[in-house]
Every structure is written in structure tokens, then in C-alpha cells.
Length: 474
Ligand code: ADP
Ligand code: MG
Image (spheres, rainbow, N blue to C red):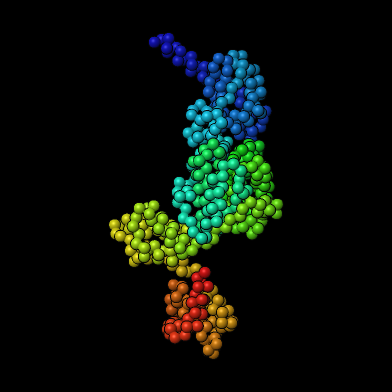
């Protein structure tokens, strides 16, 4: 008993003195190398113990280990020897390597990188981007299987698949995907990453937004760890940067990106980029970068069509395992045209509502639940736009929409505009009247009736109105 107790005390005493010595070594180092380097490289080191004359230290990532060994090992050893005759060597290991990870992939799994308040600075960026397991930043639903292909996106889809399936050389470099918001760019990029992770887990795929790229770059500059930064990016097999328009006008980041880009392309690594515009339409981008971005395959995702929207709704409905009446799906596909994200959101709301109140999904309930959204979609056409479009179509001045002139040549177009305002906006008759030079709501009512009548009897007039309507609805 006594013996055991005694030994316990000894270990504890030894721990305390070890900690104290380590503390003194690191403080000396701190003065030698400066605060920034200390915070980045020395502070994250954990003291593991001393064993047979070897001082054991650990760091969170392999990159850090290499760095510490290359830059600070000599100083550490020297300082340690000076203060502690018992220890001759200093060993630095990677925490993650003690577990399951094979040596080539010390990819700092989530568990191995607990970022305590002390160590956040360096531990945070390294694991998440160096890691081949990007699960934290990849959306489970964004796979090829769940991507509905239609005319507007078939080209981009095919290109993304080619990239995902090419294991040797990049089929085109870079793959540049562009299109409006919510049309599936991020979905396709994640799908590429998922596919490669599954089919070739050895390849490292790095996916991040251009914003994150910039943020990390700036942090590396501030902490003087740009070498680390460069190394992390230049050692991946596939680099994907989302929403690259973000770095427009940000010259230093563009410069860094340009070099990263070149070095990866030179080594035959695949690059995938997305943006909201084509390379040539991106303003604030350096000429040489634009020309690089144009070098590979540029694939455009177009605005959705009714058919694609319907297909997506059917697919999402199935995935959710709910029976949505075709009438409702058609209604949504017809009404929610902005983008796929909004479309999904609308369907989710309708489904959630029906489950909440325990009633089947109906067209009435849908209109009710989406009241605000439908209004917002309607409101995209303004009365001013209608007036302008109609005036130019009939070759009159926009100001004639408000004027008191009653000549048929201006009165008729004005009536058409009022009619369209009633059809395409949610404005009331008095509101519309006010916008047309303060006319009475009965005048608007009369105009609507008149146009309806004319449409029935004059097919070329009906065509005119229809054409205008379609132009305005975009
Ligand atoms: P972007 O990055 O172009 O702004 P996202 O890729 O984030 O758009 O897509 C927005 C949402 O729409 C996501 O939930 C995505 O899964 C979905 N989506 C977009 N296009 C499709 C498609 N063709 N099939 C299925 N879902 C899609
Ligand atoms: Mg996106």
C-alpha cells in the first residue's frame, strides 16, 4: 500500500516539475521566436511525458509536426538539455497518428483535434481543410443521385460527372460552373466530392467557398503562416472553390489564388470553380486570372424551366415519402419560378403544414400556406415596369400612361397596361388607378372589362396582350 502511494506521489511530483520545466523552455522560446510564431507553433504543443530520456510532445496535425521539427526542434532540444540533464532527445508526434489513421493520411479526424481555447488559432484551419473527410462541409443530400437533370442543367451535370469519374488526368481544367443563385452549383460540386470520396478515398478533395479561402489566407498573413497555408492548398488532388465572384476586387487574395491555381494545374490536379457569372463577365477580376479560368470547360446552368421544376418537385416529394397531388406540384412549378432553393422551401412548407394540422395536401391549403411567398413572386412585376413595357410596345411615351389624353392611340394601350397590372400584380383597383395619373377605380374596372372583351373578339389583339404578359413574366 505504502509503496503504491509513494509511487503515485513521485509521479505527480515528477509531473509538476516536468510541467514547470516545459513552461520555462517554452517561455524562453517565446522571447526567441516572437509572439506570432509562438502562438502558431509552440502553444498548440502538448506535453505527453518523459520516457527513457526522451521528451515526448504531440501536435494536432502532421503538417504541424513537420513544421515544428524543421524550425524549432533544434532550439527545443537545446533548451531542454540545458535545463534537464536527464533528457537528451525531443520527440514530436501527431495526436491523430496514435489511433487508426494510416501514416499517409493523418487527416486529423474530428476527434483528434479538440480545439481548446488555447489552440484554436492553428488547430482550426488545418484539420478541416487538410482532411479528406470533409463531411462537416458536405451536404448529404447533394449527390448526383439526387440531382434532377433537365435541359437547363444537363451540360453542367455531364461535365461534373466527367470530372468526378476521371481518375487519371483532369478531362478539363478548370471546370467552371456558373449560373444564378439557387440553381444547383453547390449541389454539383458536393456531388463531385462525394463521388470521389466513395470511388477513390485516397484522393484528397478540398471544397471551400472563395470567402473561406480569403478568410484563411488573411489569417495566414496575420499569423505569418503563409507557408503552411500554401502547403495545405497545394497538396490536394481536387480543389473546389465555390462562389469565386466573392474575390472580385480583392487583389491580394486573387494573386494568391492565381498561384495556387497554377501550381495545381501544373501538377495535373483537378480544379472546379463556381461563380454567378461567366469568367469574362466577372468584374474586378485580374485579366490573367480570367484567362486561366476560361482555359478549361465553362458550363452554364440556365434558369429552370417548368418541366425541370416539376421534375424536381416530384423527386423531392418522393424523397420525403409524401403524396403530393399532381395539381399542387403543377401549381408550385408554375408559380415559384425564382430558383430551386425557393421551390424546395415552398414544398417543405406545404408538407410541414399538412403534417402539422393532420390534413391532406390540397391546392387550397397550398395557396393559403404560401400566401406571402406567392405574393412576393407576383410582386416581382411592378406597375411601372408594365407601363414602360406596354408603352414601348405600342410606341407611345410612358408619360402617356399618366396623362389625361383620351385619343384611342394612347387610351387603348393604357387600358392594356391597367389590365396587365390587375393580372400580374396583387394591387387593388384603387391602387392601380392611382398609378395611372390618379384615375378612379371604376376606370380601371372598365379597362379590364374592355380588354377582356377585345381579347375575345380580336385574335391579333389577344396575341399582343399575351406576348406582353409573357415578356413581363420573364
Ligand atoms: P447554388 O449553389 O447554385 O446557389 P445550390 O446548389 O445550393 O445552388 O442549390 C439550391 C438548392 O436547390 C439545394 O438544396 C439543391 O439541392 C437544390 N437543387 C438545385 N438544383 C437541383 C436539381 N437539379 N435537382 C435537385 N435539387 C436541386
Ligand atoms: Mg452555392
